[in-house]
Length: 283
Image 1 (cartoon, one colour):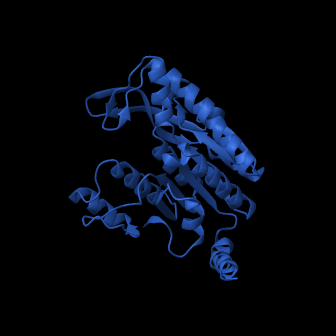
Image 2: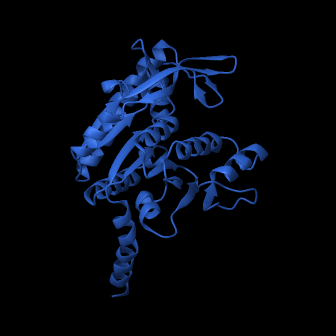
């Protein structure tokens, strides 16, 4: 009986959040362990389907770095990275398009379908969804690595209004029609800002943003986040994720979340409970 009462308490706790977010857009960057662990993949798909069924508008942007690396390895190719960015020549870009826009995107769409939802796979070149330009990184030539210039939101809005869940591969196209590999966090932030999303959620393989004492920071303002980056409290791979959230908040996103995707149903726990499971960033 106690277990049943506890389940009822969870539903009661979630009710005000469900009411508040009905009709809202939530952009989720999907990657890391949540993409490769079978149980986590299934729980993520159920989370997204539940969001859709109770009246929210989830939009998924996915990564796929490990899958790209594996495909390149099988072909006898190696990758070069500059500050975490994969140098992408023409041959590598062919693999990126095949993996991200093909197998990985299709697996996510199929997973959502198996979870009871309806999803549509897209790349940034579909309908001019992601217009990009060549990314410059100091003196380094990254090849076909892009940064988002504009997001054609009508494509995503049409999908959401037709009761589909858009699943976006981070491949953009420039004004000449050339495709580019784009960081998935950056794409998710740009999409969230363009849509005026209620929430941007980044799934990671860590608990969230950690302070100097190695404790989880449950809530962080944009201003404080920038100070932590400047003084080295936030460092390494967390810098681009936090910077992406800060930019999204500046672009009009109400709240951004960096959460632990290794936890089952992490998205639901972050959206519909008082405590959450990661770091909440606010303007």
